[in-house]
Length: 543
Image (tube, rainbow, N blue to C red; front, side):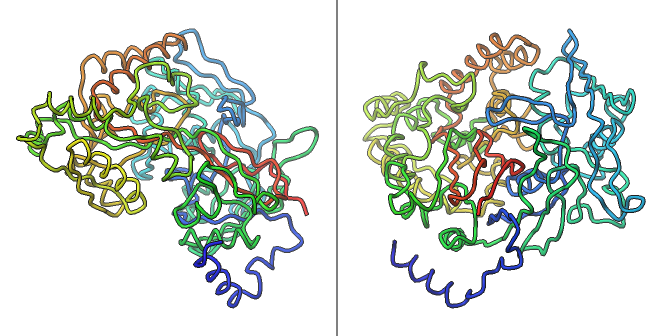
C-alpha cells in the first residue's frame, strides 16, 4: 500500500475510534459515498448520476430496464403500441401505493392510478417547475399547452405521439418519468426536493445535507421475486465525502459497502496495469465490470460562420483526421486507465449498442498517415501549424498531457487549459472555445441518443450539438431513422450516420468507458448494467 494511503488510514483511525455508522448496527444497511453530492431528491431534477442513483431507490415509472437494458414492465403490467407507432396504451398494476406521509389522510399512502401519471408528466413539462427533463415528452402530441396524456380509467393510460419514435419506450424508463403524488409534490408547504414521496423499494427517512442521507425499506413495495417481497435490505445510508481517496479508505476499512469507477488517487493501489484486482484484495473485495454507454471525446467547433473558427487550423477536415490518427489509444488505455475502457476508434456509438460495428473503418494509430494529412492541409516544416488550445477539467490533465506529447511528434502543438466543470460547460455551450473535452452518457438505450448530438436542429446553445456540425446528408439520414420502425433498417441508418461522423471528424473519440464496481465480499446481487444505474432492490447483505 502506498505510503500516503497508510498515513491517511492512521489519521482516520486516530480520529474515528467510533464508527460513524454505529447507529445502524443490527440492520442490513447498504452504505455508499456520493462525492458529487446530491442536489435534489425530486425526480424532475434527476439529471446527473448522483441524483439519479438516489431517486432510483425512491421512485418508479411505467417501465424499467433490466441489466441487459431490455425494457420491462414496472407500474405498467403490460403495454401496446398501435400499428401507426404513435399510440401507446399502458395497463397499470392495481397494487401500487405511494409511501406513507403525514400529508396523506391518516398519514397512509394512497393507491397510484393513471391520473397520477398524467399529473406527473404534465409537471415535468410545466415551465414553472423548470425540469431539465422537459425534453423527454417533445414527441408527444400537444393539446394546446398540455400534452396528450389520457387517463382512460384508473388503470389505463394512453400517450399519443405526433409521429412514430421507436426510442420512446426507452425514454419512459428514465427517472424523469417517475410517478409522484400531485398533492405533495406541488404542495408549496412541502419541500419535495428534500421530502420526497414515491412508490419505490425505499422511502425517505432523513437527510442532513452534505453529511448523510438515509432511506429505509418500503414494507409495502409491490415487486417480489420467487415469492419473496423486495427489497431485502433494511436501509440505504449515503455519505458525502468529497475526497475520493478518503472514501476509498473508508471502503478499505469496511465502513462503505460499494465504490464505483476509478480515481487517480487509488487506481494503482486497487488494480494492476492489466485492469485486474490486486491479489491482496482478492479475498476482501468483489470486482465487476462491463461496457458502459459513455463515450469520452474531444469536441471541435467546426461552424465556419463563427469568427474564431475562420482562421483556426481545426476548420480543416484533414487536420481533424490527422489528430485522430496521431495518438495511440490502446497505449493510452493501458497505461493511463489500467486497461479500464476501450479505445475509441469506431465513432460515437459505444460497444454494447446494436449499431456498434468494429468491422468498419476505424482510426488506428498511424503517424505516417497523420503527417501526410497535415501536409495535404498545407502544413509542413516551412509552414507549421499554429498551436491550438485544448480546454479540459483537472481530472483529465494526465490523459491530455499524453495526447499533447504524442501529437507533438507529428507536428501538432497543443496547449492545455484547465477550467472548472461549470465554466467548461458554459464555454462549449456558447461556442467560446474551439477544442474541448466532452462526454456523453446515454440517457436511454438507443443509438439515436448519441446521433442526435450532430443534427442541425440540435445546434448549441439550444441543443447539445456543441461542435455545431451541420451536414444535409446526415440530417436526412437522421430524419429517416426517426420514422423507421424496423430495427434492422434503423441500425443500418445509424451505422451510416456514425460513419459520416468518423469521416468528417467533428469529434476525436478518446475511449468508450467501462462500468467498474467494487463491493465488500458480503454484498450479493448488486450486478452492473451498461447505463451504470444503481438498483438496490435485489441486493442482499450477508453477515
